[in-house]
Length: 290
Image (cartoon, rainbow, N blue to C red):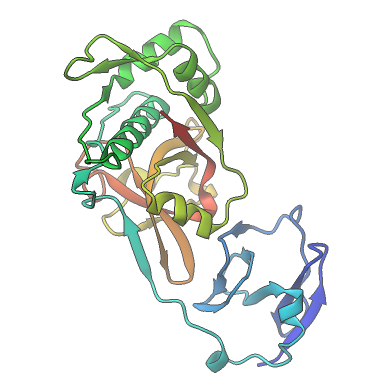
């Protein structure tokens, strides 16, 4: 199998396509995702790659130009095979402390944003306490339904950005020892755009929860345990603009990166309230400082 080189508008990158040259840009309508330093198709990878194109049946490799010039012939024997793996804070402790909060249940209400944000802040607070010397437990509980009600009273446009702004300015009602009735405010929040998969892995491995969302279709509500959610726009729910969750893990399966998330559908949904979604469907990742 022979690789053909073609310089693209990405500047320092070349595409290496099997059977011909494939050029593309960030504006190209092809569905592609960023997955860090390694990208692959059909379980075949090259190191230091930046982009990946789907579907994986199209076998394309990208590499830095200075490295690509040395690759005149490619063979499976000369390319590393990435094994499937997963890391998650579900059922895992940091310094002997649990940092993932209990699974919330939004019921039939469209309050996923408020449940996701309160769970993210609870987990970040637990992470900070677990990293103290000596490590401590922290049982901050934020009332998501009160958050939603107070937000609605102000008539703000529903979305992560506005909800985070409210959280920082107004605060959210708390429960817990010595905290009942208090309003908890976050210090700040940051949107993480164009993150490589390796950068996402690093943040999550440090225990940083990331809040974000994705579109949902008719299959999502009944996602089987162990299955990775793969959004199908042909089955999109017309009245659901998207779904917000807390990302607490990551993995790689059959040539695609995915994230593990804490949902707000109760503990009986999917895998004890946790699920998986392919990274290329994830949008609007943010971290929160408490």
